[in-house]
Amino acid sequence: MNVKAVRALVTGGARGMGRHFVEAVRDAGGLVAFCDVDPTAVTEASATLGVPGFACDVSREASVQSFYDAASAAIGVPNVLVNNAGITRDGLFMKTHPETGEPIMMDLARWQQVLDVNLTGPFLCARAFAAGSLRAKQPESVMVNISSISRSGNAGQLNYSAAKAGLVADTVVWAKELARYNVRVGAVAPGFIRTPMTEGMKPEALAKVAAGIPLKRLGEPDEIWLAVRFIIECGYFTGRVVEVDGGLVI
Ligand code: NAP
Image (cartoon, rainbow, N blue to C red; front, side, top):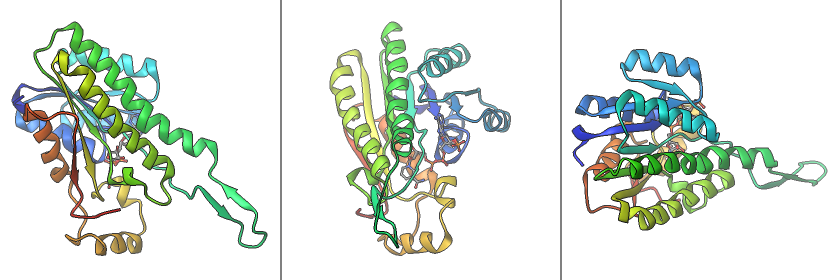
């Protein structure tokens, strides 16, 4: 599908990579609408980018359906979904108190929150999107799921690694189940990319990360957009993951 023919939904589109994807689709001549969880950020991004934006928490069923309906009214039945919204709540699965040696466990809320946004969110968005595509009998639809190289299992990111691995498994299932309805599904697994998510890290930690990357730098949102665009445009791509990580292996 040529990106000019796209009517795209981008989740988490007010900031970071999602915001870049919104701008990129708009600049390429496609139609695009986005959602984000913070209404103030949505209002700012929508006004600045000149693109319809909607407040939505992707982990909540009713919120996702309202976003889908409102966005469809604004740009027409969507034929591209970029499941981009995501959060990190990093921490060790288990550590010990330095004095008492008592185990300190990852709490359930930290686990659940990341699974809710990063795995249940894409499930709810994919469901609304695929149902809409089937109802409209679209000749072609494409879903792009933003996973992470952490899906291989990154220490300190148990919750995030589980969600991002699950999202790749779901990518394969959706690709197999939905091919008969002309829906293609791909995933992108970025390494460390320069966005507000990584800008929150300490500069020393970021420098250490960059030193361990073969290309010796963080990636740029536009380098992830190239992979998203490839999945949208390549009609023979489905059920696979594109890794864009500067050669970093976790
Ligand atoms: P970001 O800068 O934090 O942007 C993510 C956006 O999603 C934010 O605007 C965030 O809002 C929003 N969001 C959070 N929870 C949401 C919810 N429940 N419903 C709707 N929107 C929600 O992150 P990013 O770095 O651009 O990351 C984008 C995607 O790439 C994520 O899935 C992330 O896991 C993945 N990724 C990032 C990197 C990286 O190095 N940056 C690497 C690999 C994968 P708030 O800011 O208000 O929370």
